[in-house]
Length: 519
Length: 92
Image 1: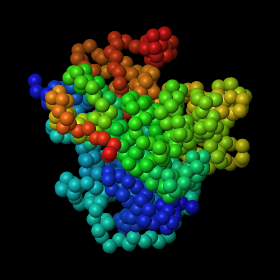
Image 2: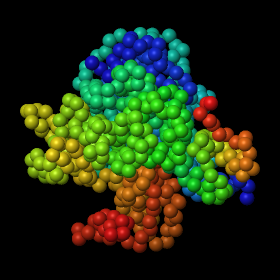
Image 3: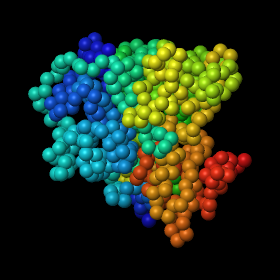
Image 4: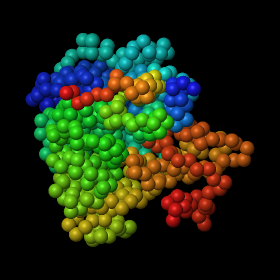
């Protein structure tokens, strides 16, 4: 079984059923399947071979969904890039995965500057949007999206060379060194995760899921994959920027499933009278990215008493780890539940021994959903994928500290490293610090998380400036905004004359954290 | 200072603009990557404080908030107490 079979099976079974609703357009399973077949043939014609990487860089759209399936059908590996990515990180990722082609939109042109010089492996680009905006110097290596489908490429497709052990995608996530790491996921990994999740959510073809999360975020991506698996409908949105619009769409489309992250629910709960909306169709809410404050869980339950709320936890390296069955929510509101179906989890101490209830240790995950490793980085892979109970198998050391209660329900305690979780996204302090150090005149920089009602954690940066460099907070933020994705831009900047140091001479972040918390 | 100028000043001070790509009054703040969901909350707080009116949930829509032009028109309508400003009902 391959991931694209989700779409193909549903296209056979449900043909004219609406699979995707986006910006007022309604796309059937058959239409998406036929378009992705045409795209696959086109990619093969242009020399994309089995195992090649093809990147997608655009906002949530019908094109991005067709693209990911088209790439899979060409036996290639899709890389869904964050739409808020900036040039330097974009180029880093495209070079890291040696992408052969890029599918993008003309509204991303300002980020794509010098693309072919900076990323020599890219042989061609497919542009959607307004054709007249494609720059002259791109024309010889560019194809316009619509022309692929007005051409004579067949809407049916022949067989695949891939098997389920081949890679389906590489998802780039923040790494502790500051450079992003490419999480390699096979078809089997993704099918396993999608099967487990749709099992515990009891998904049925009648489900209509609203997806406001970027498809570059695995949680956003899986909404499409899973709905296509069970033959449901996805209402795909670009973002949650205008919550009223989203709620209205949920009412109109009779949405049954609403996945989100804590920041999104915090914004939702700021709306005054949610009860006036007819959301009687809503069957479940899922939360992951970070744990939902207990108070927010309670308020959501008061407003939507008929809705099942699933607290979940996961990481890109294995997609999902655990979920709390909704009926347990009253008894253990702070828990993220137990391992999902067809997966085993346990907690170990520093020496790798399993610990009992109430003892904090690192969470280990065993399952077909666990990644193949980090692309091109065997050392980082060996640190997190370590030998499991059966000879030759590998299990995932998550780097997340947990404890379990007597019945095995999990409680998140913290990270082993200093990774920040903000707006549901993982951010490496090192990455932000590296960007700050690039500013001329910055001699020291330290980035720490601070608690934030809406973001979960907000990013705070301390900077020390060399004498004679009149750098303003605004200039620093502007520089960050040009280099970092929106969620990684610090919310607070504090100037210091010097930063506290540990006895070994490193910047003492613990002291900075304590000072910030007023301890 | 005109309302447009005041709004622009707030946006320039609080959100980071791309120096190479000047923001026109008609440009979508969302499409240009200037504003996100938390940015909208900041914008709403600014408008409520500066112009002394209350923004209803129903008014949190791009037609009112997604460009300098739309925001300025929205402010004028609110100040004038005009019933014509965009407020979308639930389709009934």
